Length: 139
Ligand code: UDP
Ligand code: MG
Image (cartoon, rainbow, N blue to C red):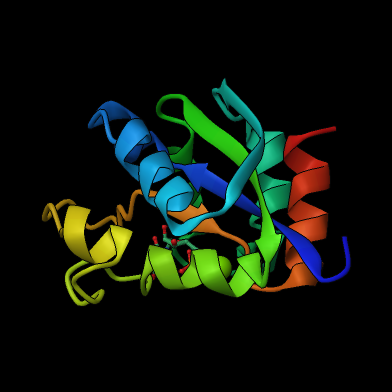
């Protein structure tokens, strides 16, 4: 369909551990987006290095990979018109303490005082990123 778009959503290990998979997916579905593909896996260092390649040189990279591989994640392909922007908007800003109430990160996330930004979800930041990331997680 014209204008139809896909994005990658991850429920990160903290979201899975806190039993928030249903809550997150329900918000996506209630917004009217379609779950086109879905799976649970524990991510390898290889997949995470590829996924977060833009952050490879960042000081938080090693801790980010540790956080992301501590337990299973749920990976989903979400479909709809302008879904990349839409799911970013539903996710909220990166830092959960300051993410807007009403967003996934703003409603469900917080700083746990462990030095790690645990923010429950990942969502692709552009259609180009979405295409690249979907190819990584669903090959
Ligand atoms: N992150 C972190 N420390 C930082 C910045 C980011 O641990 O100072 C983690 C956090 O989990 C974030 C991910 O790295 O979600 C990717 O960072 P990005 O800036 O791309 O944020 P996002 O696109 O997830 O909002
Ligand atoms: Mg990002």
